Image 1 (cartoon, rainbow, N blue to C red):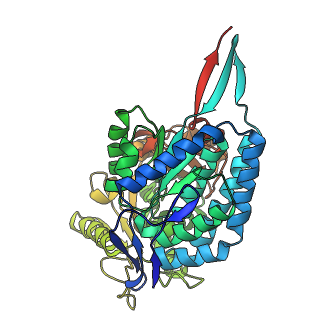
Image 2 (tube, helix red, strand yellow):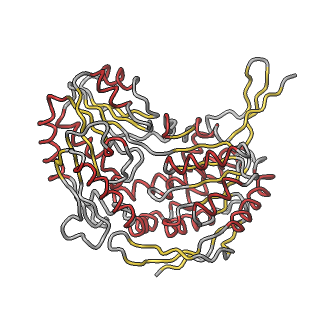
Image 3 (cartoon, rainbow, N blue to C red):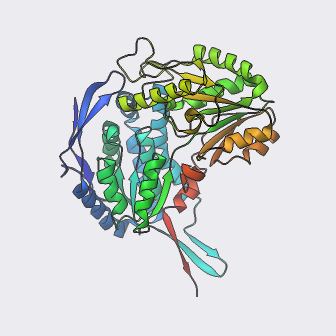
Length: 472
């Protein structure tokens, strides 16, 4: 059993002041695999103080110096890629294919920050004025459990590129993943205090980060509910915030699409990361007169291509939910879909046969879903797809936009012109056309209650900087 009894402050692994222990459970079989000692408010304050002191010098580093640090972070983390993949599968239950992609994203985030710096101007002339973009200060980074190191990497790399220092609060459920990643970052040899990591509960360490006046900005990825709490708390000290929150992404299949390609792709979009993804395309919108065809393709695709199984197996496409609480949450949504009259196409309640020991959920698809049903409105965060139908393109667009969320959307069409015309009418921060893509240099973030601000690339970097206008 792994014991994690240190946090990382001012360039050193130190014993936390906090004493609460948190059990780390393998979601594949619910066995105890480790324990982590959680930090408390005092640990958070110590980390913030270290970052505040480090900011005095780090904020004055040159772009070339910061590029050097980012390259060292990339090189150090690359050495332990396989270890990071293995522990993500064990601790989180991510499939091998997802864990490899997520880990590579974490490692590559430092290179992407270098790419951004190489095309970024910190001093600009606007009108007759000189505008200087200067680092905000100490950044509080709060990350979720569903792709832990990837989020830490992308946010920390942006903070360093900006000349900011950071205090990171990862999910306590990701402590083993975090430990390996922080050991890599420590090896890179950045100045003490540039980044600090405190394992802890959100209502303790997260609250201190939110309320502490020495935190200039918070970058948070997680639920809309928690994001709203952070936004409220940040107002008192006028913190800048970047909030990447929940989603209920529509996948709009136009009548001229190739359904034999678009529907299997929609299954992949819905079940990515075992459905535990804010960008999952969990609302499938199809023409009413094609519903029977869609259901037949769904059944054959799930039977042939979707494998709910041990995440360590190469062909597994859906692993377990992160913990028993999340398993029960998804079960409740499946029950509600049945109770509210949706047609169960595949899947249903309970464990898949032979996987009763873990937090496994059957790959589930509902048809004849109506907009007022819970499974159509609320973020489930599990492998549950809802099929809604439309009669006209105008109705399809209205259905797609009929949500409090607006993080990502998907459009399939046989005509790029049609797809772009529809995409421009969707209320979403990103729209993917005829495929599943990721652009780490393009802005990412949500409309409406899916968040505030953008991450990645130039837009993400600007969120860590404050413009100062100088007139003479």
